[in-house]
Structures are given as structure tokens and as C-alpha cells.
Length: 178
Image 1 (tube, one colour):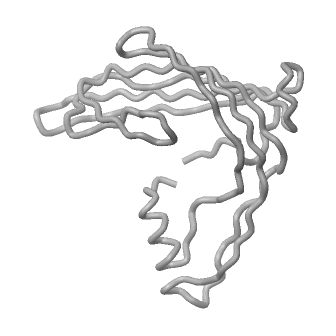
Image 2 (image 1 turned 90 degrees about the vertical axis):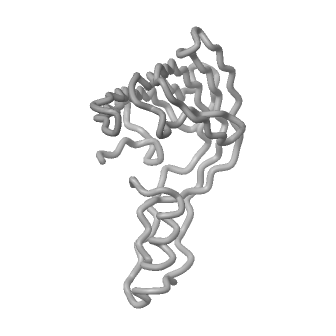
């Protein structure tokens, strides 16, 4: 969904409308990152996770108390071991950084008026490379964002995001339109 974490919480607690699906994920990630230029870099990431379904445990909400609440969608349970290689770029003129899971991510701010931002990523899960997980797939993802200044107070920004896979994906790695 396009909601922030706090908006999602309020929608669920007040109205009983949950727009996100949850599952249990336990494991770790390790990564190395190399800056190629001040605005480009590559990241190699290894993920080792165990995924399990989470079931809805309450029907509670402040309003709409009698309305049935939707359940989490089921996932494909198992061990997910992946290697991902990502090329990322960011030539925006104004950036802020947000830390999440020990990593810094550039985010737009009020000073961002023009430039490009994006990534191209390949994620591989397969037993042939010795990853020994329960899933076999290669997933390709990309995002390209262009920031355009129209005037001192107005901008027009474009985003293109997509992905595909060479084999069927586990439910927790599917792509969604929206």
C-alpha cells in the first residue's frame, strides 16, 4: 500500500482495515557495498531467512467492531537463501539519509529539485550455487525516478518501477501492481 507505517497502524486500529500482509521472518543478512563514484555504487547481499505464516489473532478495532477483518495472505513457508547484486545511482541535488537495519538510505527532502535516482537488482535463490534453500528463482527488479524542477515552488517527478522472474516466485516475493 502507499500508506506510511503510522497510517497503516491507525487504519488497522481505528477502522479494522489492514492493507499489509505479514509473515514471520527470522534470519540474517550480510552485505558489502562499493561506491563507484559519488553518485553510484554496487551492493552484494546474502540473505538467510526462515519464513512462516502468521495468522490473524484478533478481530478488534475501535470503530467497525462488528465488521469481519481480513486475514493475512498465506505465504510459501521455508528457508529462503538468496544472493542479490544491486547497482544503484543517485544524482539528485538535495538528499537526506534515513537509517534502517544498520544501513543508510537516501530519501527525498524539500531541497530535492532535480536529478535521477534508481537501482537495478538481480536476486538469485537456488540450490545449484550451494545456497541450499527451499526456493529456486531469479528475480529482476528496477526503479528509475526523475526529479524535474518546473519553477521555484513546483516540480514534476516521474517514477518507473518493475520486475520479473524467470520462474514462479514464492508468494512473499511476488510483484504487485499499484
